Image (cartoon, rainbow, N blue to C red):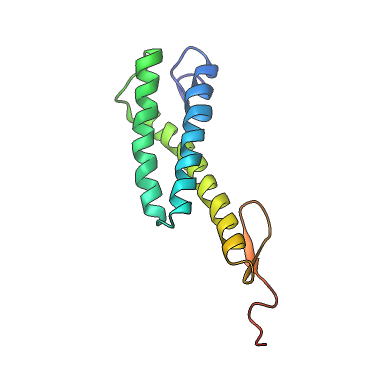
Length: 121
């Protein structure tokens, strides 16, 4: 896997920087975008910048290559997953708490319209 997903000597450095630290930052970025009701394209732009930040941390702390498209894409794809998961989790929570008479939660990332929401009184 070394050379395909990460370039550090061990997988633990990749997991620490990209998955744990970067994933937490991406989740919180998705949360912030959801809480401010911003569109998804704004989340994509934020995650693209966050991918550069994660590459810089790899470069500055662990002597990895800074400007490499391959590892930037890998880091950014992982961050996108965490970011959109955080966005969807918080959007589901928002929809079911702010509009509880219209929607009910069906899972951690989803909601549905209540049965009584569309019926006239």
